[in-house]
Every structure is written in C-alpha cells, then in structure tokens.
Amino acid sequence: MTENYKSEKAPINWVVTVVLGLTFLAAITIVPWYGIAQGFSGWAWVFFVGFLIINGVGIGSGYHRLWSHRAYEAHWLLRLFLAFAGGMAIQNSILVWCIRHRIHHRDVDDNDKDPYSIGRGFWFAHIGWMLKDYASGKLDWSVVPDLERDPIVALQHKYYWSLVLLSNVVLPVLLGVLVGDIWGVFLLAGVLRLVLSHHVTFFINSLCHMWGSRPFSDENTARDNWFLAMVTYGEGYHNFHHAFQSDYRNGVRWWQYDINKWFIAACSGLGLAKNLKRVPDFKIQRARLSMVFKRAQARIDGAAENPRWRSLLETEYAQFKETINQWQQLQLERVQQSRQKLVEVIDQSTLKARYRELEKDLKLQRKRLALLTAQLYA
Ligand SMILES: [Zn+2]
Ligand SMILES: [Zn+2]
Image (cartoon, rainbow, N blue to C red; front, side):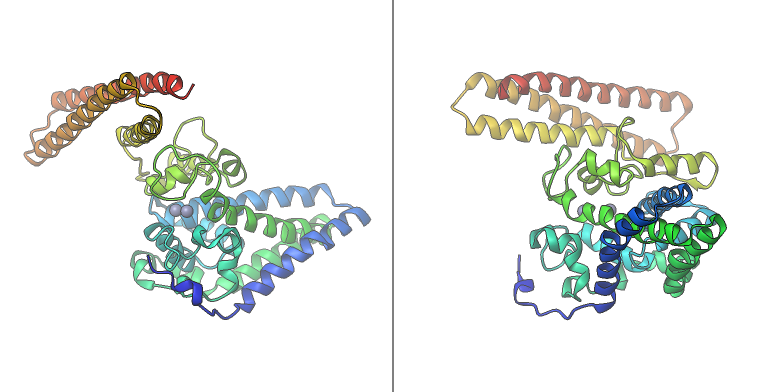
C-alpha cells in the first residue's frame, strides 16, 4: 500500500471549516447561555427531537441505504422526503455524499483512497477529512452513474444550498414565530440539533472503525457497536454493514435497535418502498461461524499443544465445510431448475425444506461451538 498522503499539502476548505466551526462554537456557548438566561419552551424541545430523528432517517434510510447502497427501491414521494430530510443535515448533496461513501466501501482502510480512512487517525476520520481538500476526497463521478439519472437527486444537488438555508434557518424561524419562541426554536432545533446530528453521524466513520466487535468479518476495521447504533438510529452495526452492504438492515437480528430498518420496513408496508434486499440467512450464519473458527484456531495455535481441542475443532470444521458444500450444491440445483423452467410447486417446497435443514445445521453447530469455545477460553 502506498502512503502518498503523508507528504500531502492540502489546502483548507474554508466553507466547511467555517460552517462546522461556528455551529459547534454556538452550540457550546450561546445555546447553554440562552437556556440558563431565558429557558427553552416545550415546543423548542419537541422540534429539536423531531428534527434530529428526521435528519437521522434522511441520512440513514436515504443517503446511505437507498442511494449509496440501493438496498431497496423507493416511491418518488419517499425519495422527495428523504432528499429534504438528508439535505437538512448539511452533509453535502446526495451525489457528493454517495461518491465518497461508495469509495469508502470499495477502498476501505486504504489511507490514500478511502476518503475517511481510520488509518489516518480518529480526528481525520471523524472531521479532519472535510476541513481540507485532500486528494483522497477528490470526487470520482464515475461511481454514481445510476444516481445521476434520478431527477430528485439531480434537483437536490442543484438547489442544495437553498435547501440548506430553507430547512435550517427559514423553517426553524417560521416555527418559532408560530409557537412564540423564535430564539429558543432556532437555537435548539436549528443549531444544537445540527451539531449533534453532525457528530453522531461522524462517529460512524471514526468510532465505528475503532470500538466494538467484529462478528462477521475481520478483513477491515469496521465494528458493531450497539451504543453507537442507539444514537445513529441503527447505523452502528457497522461490521455487519461492511460485510453485507446491500442489505437494507444494519442491525440484522430482529431485536437489534435499528430505526432505519424499521422505517424502511414500515414504508414497504405502506407501499412506499419495495424490493428490500436481504442477504440469505445462510450466508450470514456462514460468516459468523467462519469468524468463530478463525478465533478458536488462533487460540489453539497460540496455546500449548492440546491434541483434544485440535481434533474437536477439526471435526467441527470439516462438518462446517460439508454444510457449505451442500448449500452451494443446492444453489446450483436451484439455478439449473429455474433455467429449465422445471420448478413446480412441489419442487419449490422441497428446495425450501432442504435450505431450512442446512440453516438449522449451521445454527446447531454455532451452539456446539459456543460451548466448545467457552471451555477453550475458560
Ligand atoms: Zn455504507
Ligand atoms: Zn465504514
């Protein structure tokens, strides 16, 4: 890996520096001062929370899962809402955001190519990458040809700064006039909301590549972090996301807190979203088990020779390979059958039953391995 970035002299991006700097300063000085001196109305708090959630959904369900990853398809009404809600968060237009995000996935952890590579430190990955025009942040328009065809995306890009002013100044002031608390609504729902919304999103690029677990893959720095998932409406399950980026869920298990996953599913129920992409459960289990084997193997290799553990693990691994072989065979059969148009109702249900059987095998094996590794790590 080359490391040209070390000798790079990048010019300061003044627009971003001033916007991020001034809003942050106001949030830690004027906002608390006004709160103590004047107090905020209940309405100011209501708009503050409402705008925070709207921004989070705009970025998570819109910019990220819909436009960057095409994890589902959305009706134009939903796209219009997401383009507004995401633009309000002032994180650049959909087009620019998606270019950088697609490159982040493609070249993750490459310090010269990943626009917010964690290899360049916490500060750089969190905010530093935006404050200067680095070579790694250069816009490569060839990665978003599909988005340039979306008229709502094009419109949002063209009128981005008007949208920013309308949603961040005009809207809070108008609402403030309506409820009789102009400064309160502007400072809480305008300024503080924006700064909080900024930094929790930035945590995905910084902390979610530093702190947390890696249950699905250790091929990159992305981590699953339930606490960050709580403050980012589900985006904190970042290890799963980097492993299976086209899935509309980030918190893949039903109990994992992921507001964006529920929002997209609800929109699908209302007919506003369709073709929600899900990675087959078998592939997810396979990734998790591969990681368990990898860790157990490293543990055994590092410890004193223990033939019993080694042979137990080898037997389990052979069985794991066998289950995967059977699954691949089944995939092949399914493709051939559908090609020959031989799949009848009865075949479909046999296929489904065989898939379920293999999924069950993996689940049972994961339970056995959990017991085995619990003893191994004791
Ligand atoms: Zn992503
Ligand atoms: Zn990432």
